[in-house]
Length: 344
Image (cartoon, rainbow, N blue to C red; front, side, top):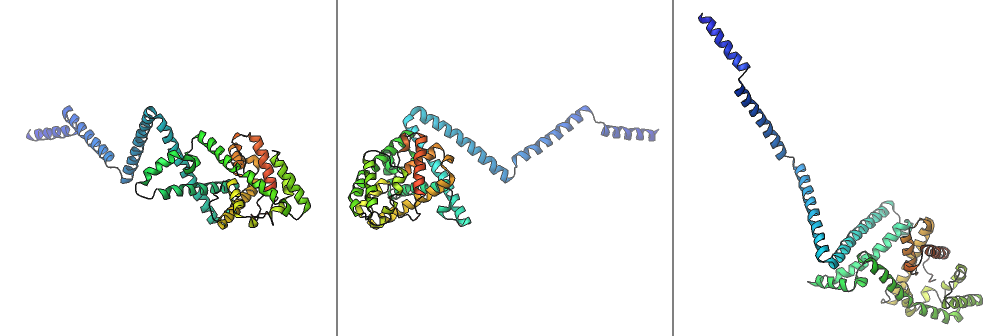
């Protein structure tokens, strides 16, 4: 009897351990779920440092975009005129930075492949030429802003004289048209001076046939007639030697040519001559690269910019006329020697 009671008691204890009551079961489930939640929460709170940094950067970028959007809406609503200038300035910085990265990439490829400027494709050559011109203009602003507190004066000067101090990225669409018209009017002022000089040197040309052709060319230009390609190619010998060779030009003649090419005329004569030679050589190299590419591959904007660089005010001329004019220019340029000594 006593032994059976002991066995029954032990079986009851084992049974309670195997099948606990509902209260005990509920407590065990709550305990297990609590442990699982603690483990999950600790895994969320203790991320790797790399994940933490990415999350922080993403959060900062998102908040910055939101704040920037609110700031833009505030400026556009309360200061519309300033907002226009602010937008143009920010876009100009982005475009200038993109140009700088592209120029660096081109220069890196030139160094890796051991190629020179004149061996580049047309678009890369034109990008480097324009970027150098833009950097030169920006360097002037950097120099005048070096003195203490001069940066405030620089901002005022940029606002008052955008054509003289800012590059094209910081011009409004209307300013781009107006400023190009102003620049073309400036270079037109020297055209009459150049034609007058050509008429004075006609007796100095040794060949009588070339004298006649040069007289006819000057007469056509003065009457507003566009000379034919052959009219100009016939006279190329006149611009290689005395009296129209670039090495025989006087200082005032080189200043007139510099103004016609939108180059600064306020330099000593040796620097003026060197600048003219360099500029004409670069344009001649661009012409050869463009002839290799084909005018048909250029967009309308590229055609107009190419014509404007070479002396035609293309802002108010139709695209097809610009392409025709540029084709005639390339026909003349590619027929000349690449020495950079011709002023034609």
